[in-house]
Length: 369
Image (cartoon, rainbow, N blue to C red; front, side, top):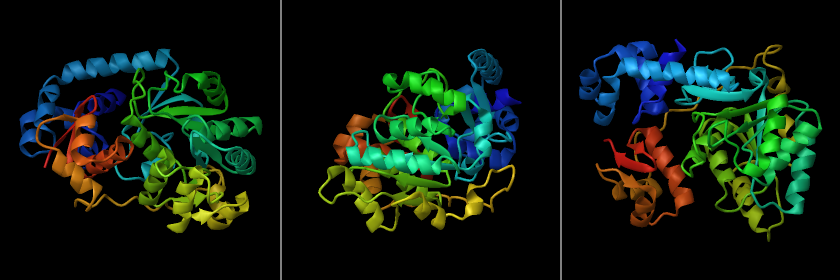
């Protein structure tokens, strides 16, 4: 039942990784919730802090039922991992979101998708490239982006102008538009595509949500095109997740003296495919990949490899040393580790996916190993 998925997904201290492991052992969310909390805690399948929530299973299910009814009343679809409408590519990544919230056309996920992302402060060159490339691409793939200012907005708008379908992945609930200036655009997207989020309705656009959002942008797509990106752009986080998920990464070359081309230069230097026209993308990804899923299913997608259970030397080790068994806020971790918050958020997510840390509420994190 859908309520069991929602109830399990809503328990504090659990995330996609822990839920994946629980389902591997118990098979279904219902079986997980019916297991003895003490047993789950003793076997370290759940944090000790989550055991109390497992003990009130009936209350969790009642809340989940009310939540589902509320979503239905608001025109929000709730997709669970076993649904046929759940995005095909996203199912293939390591520990995909167990629950997705969708506003708009669920059928849009039956087509292949390509992500177009970039800086929030683009140049005229970047905007022109985005409009031109999106116009060429949107006839053969759904355009996925993050509804942010700049390149994201330009990609969504151009796709709609060309009569294509587009998906916006949000770092907040689908009932909240961020930035607020894109409210009208979000409504138009719902008419020819969808708003998607792994966060329940009502969730505010907190900073820590956006690396998760970026992971879904790349995960829902067969490739990621970065148009312009500075050295610390969130678009580079999306590209990094794309590589982890065995997705193709493309980048538009830019002027070498432009700050918003520094990130794309780095991507190309590291092996991303330079793009001048859509043909550069189509040559790299076979034509069959861009066929509608229902007409010509793609070859099996290579699954994302489970993150290595070892700490990477550098940022991950520095963050691990800054953490303890007691929850700490992001700003305190940033000060102790010496890592700036934009980069720190992605590092925290990587450590969480590897099973080393957990988020205990708000933007607080602690060790669990």
